[in-house]
Image 1 (spheres, helix red, strand yellow):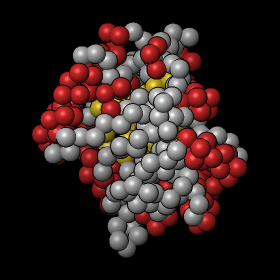
Image 2: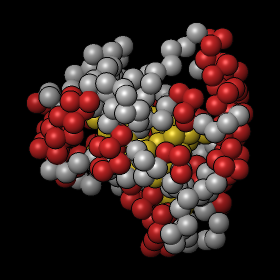
Image 3: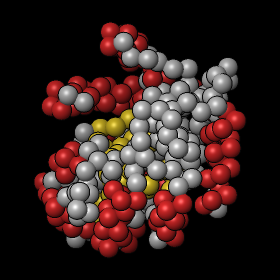
Length: 314
């Protein structure tokens, strides 16, 4: 990477995609108030409908939460989708959910991340991967007795919504890495994938900050030094509902300290789609990646997952 790769002479880019699992006004609003205070605008995903699966959290049907989300949007934060809800939703409900999103916020979502094991997830489970990674994933799933769904891209599925995705969603998240420099791990993002092109447009990766402890570890001073030195770009995947806010409403002190360090640096702090739009323009139309590139980053992902499992048992 060259110095001043980013607008306004900024040396690196940093943003966050916050998966909405467990989110309420009480447990995430202090985080977003703080982000606005220090000059970071990021991406907050939402559910349109109340959860009906294994997770809890607010949705756009909750009046107080909707006011909060609208405020975020008015302050420059991006609002994306984490499926229309937690659990099983039919095609009719998903289409309705997109309409509700637009009616409430004034636009359709442009960015999406699949939620855990929702049966309507797009190109999820083994379909995320190329052969032979797909075969290895299938074997591991059988050994671990994990349920594997059909997927929202399959026309025969009762929760098919691939055509809606293609029409409205520009970006979908796929792989997540341990390294802070997401762009170093996936330098061609955002990119198109031939075999997924019927129901998707562009794919991107992220860096793993799943919980507050993992987020804090990811943005250590040494990691930020390296991100800046490499002229990299970081898209953190996290759950701001995961103990970033303490019971008394205050922020986790180490998270606050490290984020202030981040904000003091010469970074470009914009929502995820803004960063991806910028990177996409830099590709000058060369956005379709081949098998060997995809297989290569999947191997990196697999190695990262093994190390993550060994360290955190997650």
